[in-house]
Image (tube, rainbow, N blue to C red; front, top):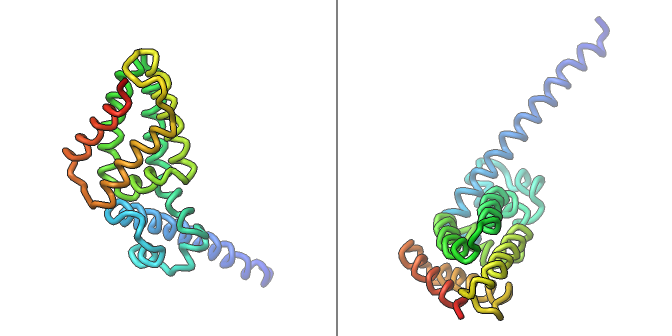
Length: 192
């Protein structure tokens, strides 16, 4: 056996081990970020995520150069679920009834995750903006029912719905009954 064969085996094995470590570290970072953002919101720092994950800051920054990159990675799956719910509502026969059911359901989902709620109300990250656009389409689809103001649009939705969510977050109000109450008020704001 050539000496180069002896050198190659450990290197390949070492690379495989490093990839496994990187994958485990990635999973730990995502799990830590998901937990911290859900519990404390977006004021959580990348160093806090790294500490909770048991990795160095550089490990986090290597995969997520900015905090927004980490936030998108953590919330992407949750936004996809909300987006799927919105698309189901859009395909329904009664858009107004779908809207009436959708808003409280979405708020229930946001109550359980402070980070997701904060990303949603800001609406600036791509998944949140896309979701708000779809909800705007649901408002448009509900207009022919006569149950939604004809002049209501996506900007109104962003101001009213995101404004409620923002204030509840700022006031640190997480009582589900209160969120449901304001969900009813949001729906009332769109009535003619």
